Length: 571
Image (cartoon, rainbow, N blue to C red; front, side):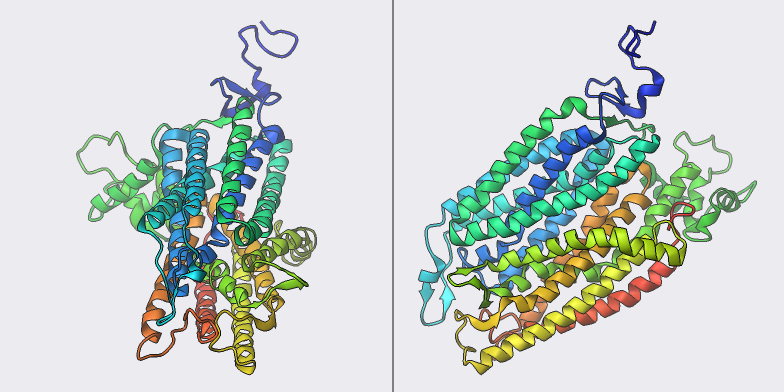
């Protein structure tokens, strides 16, 4: 019997009010009127803003802490920052696996938030343990900074990597969980979901802007323990807010009880096992081609996963056409993933060498007030906030009129545009660094590493702004591409794959710096990354990265041109 409020006497919502494939906090079918949409998404967006505020509160100025209180060299500090960023970007693959296979996104977010609070708390304690000032601890003979106590270093790096581990569970799950709050089968909620991604990106960059402008100033001018402690407090409040919204959330149910990783992994195992087998009755390849005509002849070896050995009973765990299709969809992503690594290597420099470069220049805005070098990274977020509306309101309509495509340009074209802009940014960075070195020579400051170069830090603004525009194209394009092109059950993994590009890119950057440091620092010569940047050659390194970007453009253009989209009609 149905009551007047549209609910059965048993308390079960009517089918028209139920979100298919979702349940509420109590495990009952999710009611559209009482769960999900913007009410739930706002809680989740708040958590992401706090997490990005905390992450950039660490990463943006990390190189300054390593070369300052911890007394590391520029090259070593850059390698450590890249290694940490790489780890933080690769671990989401593990976090996504755990979420999609075991805990679910909701529980993973809670666990990750608790670990985040713990990591940031320990990080603040490690800064408080700091008992010396590296600027007062110099060996005049060899100009080498004293080493901090081993216990302090251990606590610091343990805290740092605990935060990276927490980010691994947080980053791939929060956005996917936010998108889960909208019913894709409902036209109105589907439109709202599209708006959700826009507000998500704007809000996220708002958190980053505050971190870059406020926390970097606190860290350099007040105290590091306060600079690390504020994000810890912010994450505590964010976790409380997230938990308060629990009863409003929708939780997706997996229609296929099989583990998606096992299901797709079994395709590769079965194809390898049947690599020498031949179809007996009908060509299994022709059958697969009939059902999946858009795949052409790519990865035909996976079609053998559909074969069953002669005379045997039908395999209980036999692979389906859909399983093979999903496996092929993942393999098609590999060339695009690999060709974007060059962009990721270039991207790594914005929080390392760019920051050290700016620290040597005149950073005064008004008399008596100078901005922290790390705060220049705010120009990246600022340009994103300014460019996104222009892209959506101006560029897309013009492109749509020319190409006749609903999105104006394809996801791969958008990614490629950003890679080209990153190449231009590196060329500008090399030219500006050459000008900085010439200014140091002109004013006789080559042998004075602590002296301020009489050259405004705003010379660096073009390379930061261009990187922000490149970010708006490539980063958002990659996020959309990997989310859209993976199987429906692996959306968290899709976002983790996109992040892993920048994880590997950070490790490659660290490796590149290490090799160049060893190759250029012998026979009494200063290396390209000398602690005295006035004797270093960052300009040579930037030209090298510009060449890498040019090679990336050519490689990416080839693979993008041959890519077949996973969904028919998708641009």
